[in-house]
Image (tube, rainbow, N blue to C red; front, side, top):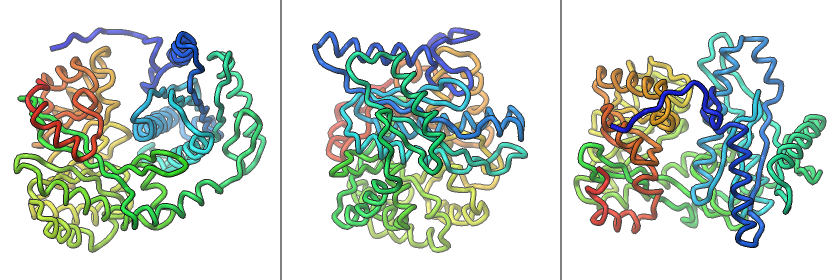
Amino acid sequence: MASVAKRDVDPLRDDLTGLASVERAHRTLAAWQQSAIADGRTAPVHAMLIGLARFNAVNLAYGEDAGDGALVTTAQRILHFAEDEFEEGDWLAARLGGGNFLLAAHEACSRERWQWLAEALADAVAHPISGLGDAGNLRLWARIALMRPAPGEGPTMIFDRLAETLEEARTHKGRRILWSDRGLTVPGRRSAEVDADLLGAIDADQIEIVYQPQVSLDDGTIIGAEALARWQHPQLGRIGASQLFAIAERTDHVAQLSRHIADRALSDAASWNADLRLSLNITPADLASRSFAREFLKLIAESGHAPDRLTIEITEHSLVSDLERSAEALRELSAAGVQVALDDFGAGFCNFRYLKILPLDAIKLDRAMIDGITIDERDLAVLRGIVAMAKALGLKVIAEGVENEDQRAIAASEGCEYYQGYLCSKPLEHAEFLALLPEHSGLFR
């Protein structure tokens, strides 16, 4: 087993949220810029500072524990957003103190795309946060400062300009996004255009399905893949699954988008070898429909894919509205052979009642549960506790976000059955996934 170093304070990591610290943010931005200078070019860096409005009022009204919980949940939403949107390039998510967070990307990006990403992230942050005691369902609203650093603007100047711009944004009521060049945005214009594009993209079959392999920790074989949606927007570039569904929710196209993805993925997976599994994400809108289970089983039958080779992944967010109805639909699917996994486990404040009521077969650990297990004994202790609980309940454990061999070795030694992450592969187009199977099966041991 890989060794785990005990530490009191990691200067490169925010102790509460696990995101990068201010010091690491400085170092990373400087490294991006120095690398570009060495090559005689300007680093393609975009940055945004996310500030939670009136965050101090949460601590005063509900206590610091509730405030800390809200910060942890916000950090995870920013992290998931970045993972979804910046799959191809380098990026950095950091907490700068209090309710302020930094998101930076080291890739070419148009002003329009960075603007849209800020709007989409602000929407994601504003989703209700539950499980914070007396706070009930808490909402946090964000204002965001944006910039594209000019040549010669180092990390200190980037932070100062973003902070000044964020402070200015707070004085503009109704304006939540502001560029550091003082260019106020036109609220809703870009979002409205993107919303209008989505239905046409679905009809034109422009929503891509990619597959991220899932690997056995016992013998290193690829046992299947999770299907993920991507949309290559003609002006904004690639839009990841989370924001794709956020757009669909605004335009009331969730059911159509979800069915399109399931239909495409099931059709692809029907041709796979019989020992490979497909994992599909199920949305809150899916579970809210009384006819969902019946219609979904019909879709499976029409595809020719065996129900017992399918896993559906649900998140805590999917279950908030009506747990009993969700449990009923999931039991119907489970009875037909479909397996059920609780996704993003550990990303927020999980209601452990879900583990009792739902017909679960597995829990899928959020990458935040994996990030620190090689360097922090506390993170490792949490992993051990979750795996022990899962074993007691007869649930398998999937480790998500495994990026290096040490993480894989610890996940295996602690009893996780499967892993998913860049150590094996990024999400792949269908033909690329099929090409990976004979070459890599059995090599990730």
